[in-house]
Amino acid sequence: MKDDFSSQLSARILAGAAPVVVGLDPRVQSLPTKIAPGATEPDRILAFYREVLPRLAPLIPAVKPNIAFFERFGAAGFGCYEATCQLAKELGMLVIGDIKRGDIGSTAEAYAEGHFAMADALTLHPYLGRDSLAPFLSHCSASGKAVFVLVRTSNPSACEFQDLETPQGKLCDAIARAVDDWGSDLGDPKGFSLVGAVVGATWPDEVVRLRALMPRAWFLLPGVGAQGAGFSDVEGAFDSRGLGGLVAQSRGIMQCFSPDDAQWLDHIEQAAVEFARGIREVATA
Amino acid sequence: MKDDFSSQLSARILAGAAPVVVGLDPRVQSLPTKIAPGATEPDRILAFYREVLPRLAPLIPAVKPNIAFFERFGAAGFGCYEATCQLAKELGMLVIGDIKRGDIGSTAEAYAEGHFAMADALTLHPYLGRDSLAPFLSHCSASGKAVFVLVRTSNPSACEFQDLETPQGKLCDAIARAVDDWGSDLGDPKGFSLVGAVVGATWPDEVVRLRALMPRAWFLLPGVGAQGAGFSDVEGAFDSRGLGGLVAQSRGIMQCFSPDDAQWLDHIEQAAVEFARGIREVATA
Picture 1 (cartoon, chains in turn purple, blue):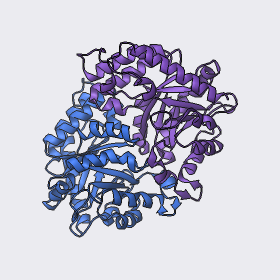
Picture 2 (cartoon, rainbow over the protein chains, first blue to last red):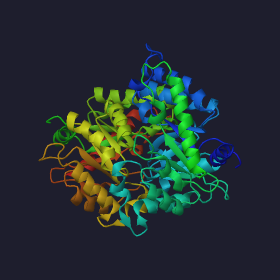
Picture 3 (cartoon, rainbow over the protein chains, first blue to last red):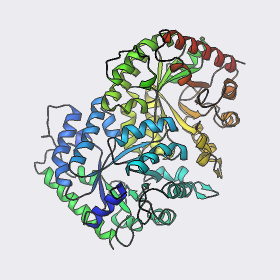
């Protein structure tokens, strides 16, 4: 469908948005001290995003709330996650729910129903194989939503299992081939599919290698900044139009200020502008 | 420590409790029609467990709420998960939070903090490797809590990646060796460790094979009943004392009645008694 996740993302980037997604991983100790100082933690987090997201919405097509940092505050934190997703949508941003779920079919259906009601796309674990993805893919087919499957993660231990040699190449290669297959009939056949891949920018050679195995997959690329990767490390994800990659950045933008700095909101906007400029240059190089 | 998860579980089973964990996967359409008919879905679910869990507590050492079936109702559902965990603890049951999380270290720390506050043990994905487990293992070491790592899952597609041949055997064998290693310094050195494994009862030959690779791991065994495995399929998980396995059962106990049957609570208790008896026989055979 014309307005599916992939088409919307492509259109926004082709219209000038940077291929960047800002990660929302709220850490209370890093919030500006002046943000709702007497309120509960989830209320302070939401108040922070009510200030920040309107500044980011003109610059960046999507946000990626990581639900771990909301769930730690229990039901109120979960409510804050819901409200943050809703706020981003109202501002016209796409929402990638970074939930990294993965369970057997009947459970996966419950996750898909609950989480696609909040987000436009979801991150998923591949370990249980195709039938654990199927309920999510049905939703993608019906509603144009999308998933990003963990293929090659950004953390140092990624190599422990993901690099194991198998008859299909490394384990992450076997998963990459499956991602390509799962997405083969989802999304515009001439464009990117609705089954994307998480590929850590911390492994630039792998970004290039895995791109060949998943030509139609959006790459969600964490790892630039705090985790050590640089701008140029994501280059291999992009096609000649500057499409195909979506570079995640969280701490470098959302924690770029000291909590008692009165100009914190301007600092965030400036950091986002600079990050967006840097990534746009690499993507269209 | 003497009262760590593993020691408590062993003590209860040696004292006569069946090595069974009841899965709490609430499905509203399967609730008794007379349970809080006008209330919200999460409130109906909690009202159901307030009736059921006191009947199960004398029979079964642990419950395993699957958070997917709570999260689908948003923040109120998450609150219901918290309240259900609390209720089970107050009744003296161990709580295995079936959350199947798995993320990079800094995110894993947020999950560990949030979820170990609610549950005594957690299920986890292994795909990201050791550093994604480390924050959970630190909590286990400090507080005697436990994790169950997905090794060989019960679903039909489990073989897709988990059976891929690697230089360390199948992928699930490589994970099994890691589970054994991760648990090597956790828990009573003469007993079971605090790093258990999820091993589907639907693959009885794998239960036997994987037991040899993880001699000190508790096996959490889903798949008996609705997923097709029988009582005897879990036999290979148990040692000569009847320890080492914990057989999960959900639908066969919690949905064994028709919603308008006035005797539903007795039916649940009877189903639990029968399941416990059957598993105890197999475990101590």
